[in-house]
Image (cartoon, rainbow, N blue to C red; front, side, top):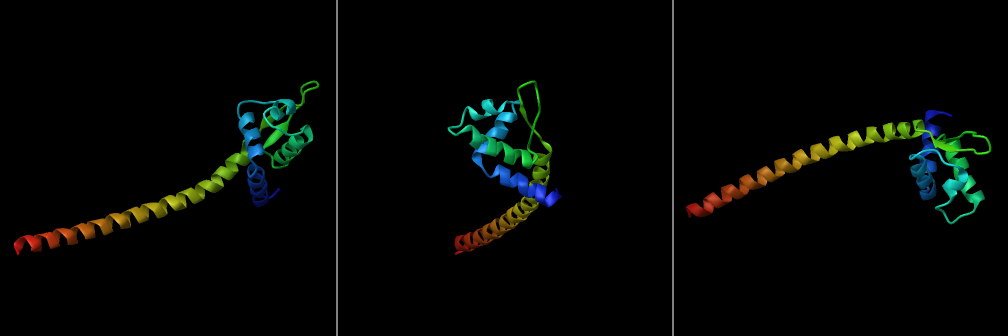
Length: 124
C-alpha cells in the first residue's frame, strides 16, 4: 500500500464511531470478537465487517490462541496519521502566532491613539 493510500485507509476506518470505539477498547489490550461486540447493539456479522475494515487499514491484527482469535491494536498507521496531522497543526500554530502578534500590534496602536486623544481633551 502506498503512503497516500495507507493514510486514506486509516482516515476512512477512523471515520466511523463504532470503529473508533473498537480501537479505544483495543488500546486497553487485546480482545476477542465477542468481547468487542458486547457494547454494541449490532449483529456479529456487522461487527466482523468493521473489524475487516480496521484490519485492511492495518489498524488491528488478529492472532491465534487455540480456539480464540484475539484482536490487537496496531499503532503504526495511527502514528503515520498523527505525523501527517502534526505538520498541519504546526502550520496553523504559526498562523495563529502571526495573528496574535498582529492583534497585539493593533491593540497597541489603538491604545496610543486613545491615550493621545485623552491628552488633547484634558488640555482643552
